[in-house]
Image (cartoon, rainbow, N blue to C red; front, side, top):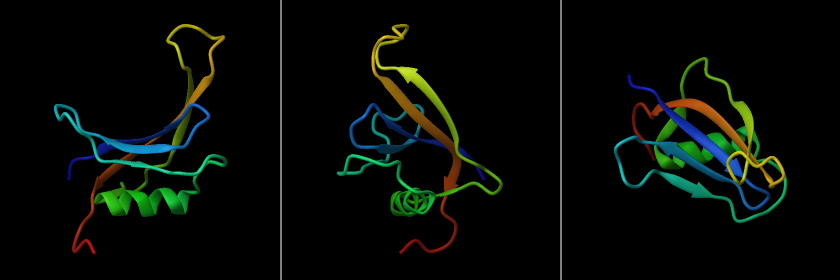
Length: 93
């Protein structure tokens, strides 16, 4: 089964989670409406399931940070988490 990358990012605003689908113009995306703490692992799994995906066996979330403006370390930090995912197996409710 093919694995894809799901990413979750925030620059201080609400968190967004999306599944990277190269070659497609729109990616499956979810945006939390609340500001504040990082969504829990359980919340992320629930959103992935809602989008039709699940964390690939053995995969773990990894985190990096970037600058809001590429190459400018004085701009706000963008936190980005990533994990390998696959399409859900079986019936999706």
